[in-house]
Length: 279
Picture 1 (cartoon, rainbow, N blue to C red):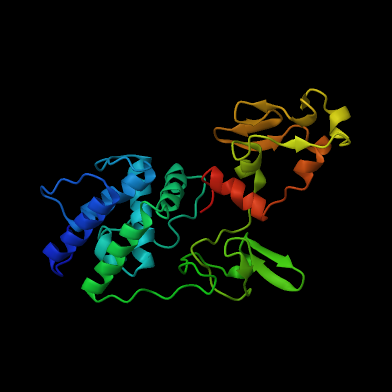
Picture 2 (tube, one colour; picture 1 turned 135 degrees about the horizontal axis):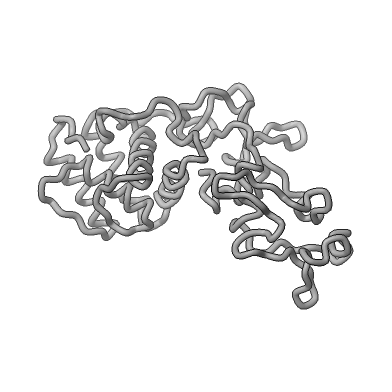
């Protein structure tokens, strides 16, 4: 990790020590800096409030990604991230990268009630101390993104009547708007499989669904209702994972519930968020 840029290190360090104390995490003041504390906070976000020192491997890279995104939101990338940044463009683009999925989880933790006020206050105070203006927000309400494209090419673009809507922003958008940080290109269900994995624990099936008769080993009775059989935390008909593309082995005969579940909808977004594939 790099040290703080010279803008009054004592004041900057105090801002981040205060943030850690407000969150309720321990911090060692020996040979530390605001950048190091911020990085450790990003680790703690990924570990769900468990304070850990810098490490190696995907979790370390994930913490750097979280650090990069949070700092950039406030115009602080040059101040609160390592000078030798390994990235250019969208640091969350590759959803197949384990460190990206861990980073997405960390960013979700950053909005927890126990974290958000202190973390936001520290970032705002740092920007004020450095004389940095917080960048304007995307019209959808999020920070601007670094991916190429626009709202018209985003996976979360939808149409409601005569309006173009965003599942992320939960509001009306315009195709020509540039990307926000929640932007994702077209989704590939076979690279995701979230809806058939641990995102949902029960998939109900109506009694008159043809799948009840066609798939007697998959659609099972539970009291007075039918549901899809689970194999651990995933649908028993799902194959793939561990580097292999996901595939529904009964796709042609799948229940109506599954047929109604389509990519790019609010349910799809919820499923991807639950398994760490989307912010």
